[in-house]
Picture 1 (cartoon, rainbow, N blue to C red):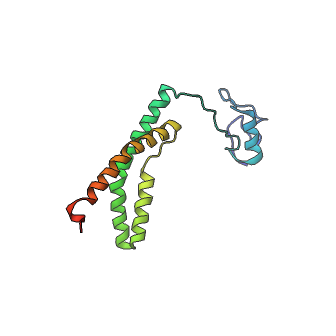
Picture 2: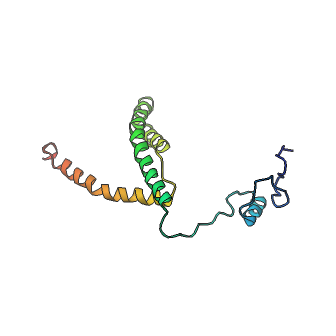
Picture 3: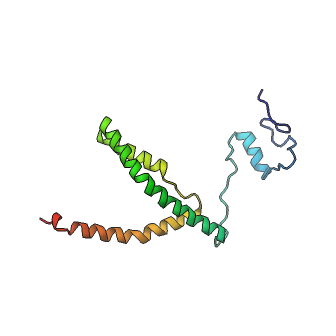
Length: 144
């Protein structure tokens, strides 16, 4: 049998006396863990609390910054990895490697505020990208 810290038992969290300083957040959640073995069994969406706090807002901004910076770092590394992979494999394996490395190195926002702010940045930048694409195709090199 596994050695557990004093005050802990297996699959019976409701019957154990917890060590000093420990409390169960949700009695029903503890029962669900014991019954189903799934630690996420009692996770429910938290109701919307309205406007985000300053801390949540700042965390969202930090997550967007993390996404932008990690993406800028990940792109060249992913490109080089794809080139190496394509040299020893085929073009598809190179492209797959680029996507895998880029996804592994790019931070994705986890909070609702971070996701919303990243979406807003994307919506703001999209017209710029579309305009640059139009200009690119109007260059003399692309004319018939």
